[in-house]
Length: 194
Ligand SMILES: [Zn+2]
Ligand SMILES: [Zn+2]
Image 1 (cartoon, rainbow, N blue to C red):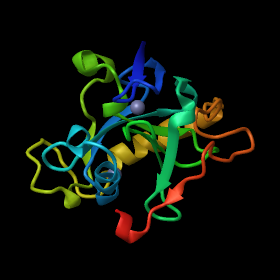
Image 2 (image 1 turned 135 degrees about the vertical axis):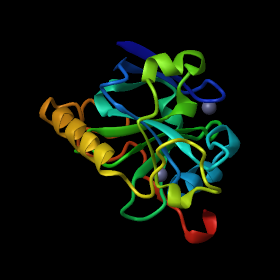
Image 3 (image 1 turned 90 degrees about the vertical axis):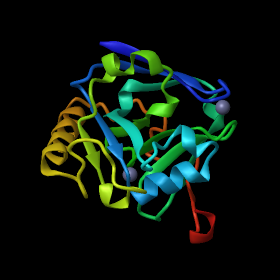
């Protein structure tokens, strides 16, 4: 198991993803237009997106992600009123992670926020799925790209969610208070702001 250091571009927001192994989460690349809109709304999208518009994400549980300093710089937005809560830093506009809500243990940590570029393959293992390739900017050359979410990875995510939920790993959360509210109110982006 590895503790992965988390750090925004300017270093004001730092934390750790605890007890990570390649098998206790899901490393995926998402090409969806919402992930692209999120990256493009923030600073240096080219540091988040690959040449096909893909975002690398490691899905783990909320209890494994701890913000140790700079939590006052956390910001949140939604691209659709019922969509994911997408977290970033106000200090330097680095994307951090995607969450659902306080009850769902899932958090998808964006690789750019991980300070482990050199040993990422060892820490996270290989990418398990390339998803939503119908939104890619051009046809990705990765093997095994899928339009939408293939069943294998969907079942894997659901299985992880259930096991995290049973073990209470939606708490403690760096993103939601005990009453279930996001620690900062997510801004819902208008079409013109995307
Ligand atoms: Zn920063
Ligand atoms: Zn996406």
